[in-house]
Amino acid sequence: MRFVSGVLLCFLPLWVVAADQPVAIALHGGAGTIERDRMSAEVEAEYRSFLDRAISDGYQQLKAGEEGLDVVVAIIQRMEDSPLFNAGKGSVYTWDGHHELDASIMHGEQLDAGAVAGVTTVRSPIALARAVMEQSPHVMLASRGAEQFARELGISEVSPAYFETERRKRALESYKARKQAGAEPHVDYKFGTVGVVVLDSEGNLIAGTSTGGMTGKRWGRIGDAPVIGAGTYADNQSCAVSATGHGEYFIRHTVARDICARMQFAGQNLQEAAETVIMDELVVAGGNGGIVAVDAGGEVSMVFNTPGMYRASVSGSGEKRIGIFGDEP
Image (cartoon, helix red, strand yellow):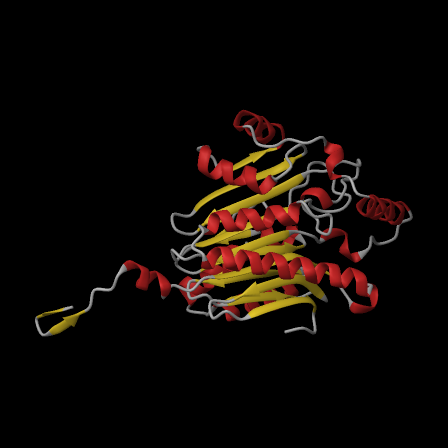
């Protein structure tokens, strides 16, 4: 250490500075009518076990200094590979009995972003979204063009049959039967997405989101998950957000960007901004869903206006939370 103009300057080794940088992570596995009396103890335990392992592993990777971008992709890929969630293997069916997958990712340092929409043969849409961000001059690629880009890069392809599950097939049959009978579809037909947000050891905020979309969707419908500013947003000046819910409302209200902007320009903290958008603005508009978010100080917010949301987090202080139902903290 030394004195300059009467001021004591202390030079610390880089590892000491890095140790002061908190890391944090939050994830969601979809929001909707998720209630205790509609879920068996066995299914609940399966979800809780998955969420616990995923959040713990992600946090340890961040503590070990792994880049946040790698952690976001890795944890989302675990969820894409699980039939528990509406992403990748567990994706819902379109009206015509197919699967059309969407994903996006954003890095808060330079506001780099990548997204894909309507892909049918890519095993990991989030990996392809990252490739769009890092290896193309574009932000969003769709359908056949996105799949061609994946082939050129050698990104893993699968047969569309890979995404088939009996659970989602029954959901489509129920949806179509109710529609054809003139009845309202089950309320949860429009929900289901996975997402991860992190603050890494370099102080960078990263957000990623992946989904199979909406049960029974038609005409190439695209929701908020691949739309930067709606379902995904990250900015080192404010926060990282991943959303889940009725995508049309999240697009109209640019939910993810709105939360970040309220912090950056209106002086709200993360929880205030998230609650204003999800519990006030969206509720008034008639939109249902939720978000997970983390800010530059490692604070975590998990806010939803539905009966439940699969969620887990570890904040910058090391506090761990896992929840499914709305009556959990």
